[in-house]
Length: 104
Ligand SMILES: [Zn+2]
Image (cartoon, rainbow, N blue to C red):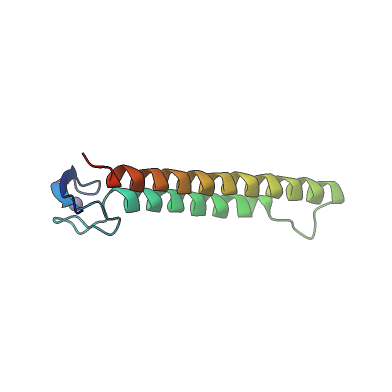
């Protein structure tokens, strides 16, 4: 059941063929279409956020006990947020796959 659709490339804006696979690339610029593009955006965002917060939440040897405790607590909250983002991303990806499998 291969379904070819015409979609607008998120990279260059040209209309291109999409078979519903996440590995499909644009005929014009060679960029990945929809799903992959979406996952890359999230990946980029999470990585950037991690780098920023690593600098900010780095527990230095000069930090006091309270400061260390506070930073460690924030680190834990941060990981919960990241896990939620990943869970959300997996959920949305699964939805996209389901939608692309549906006829019409
Ligand atoms: Zn393109």
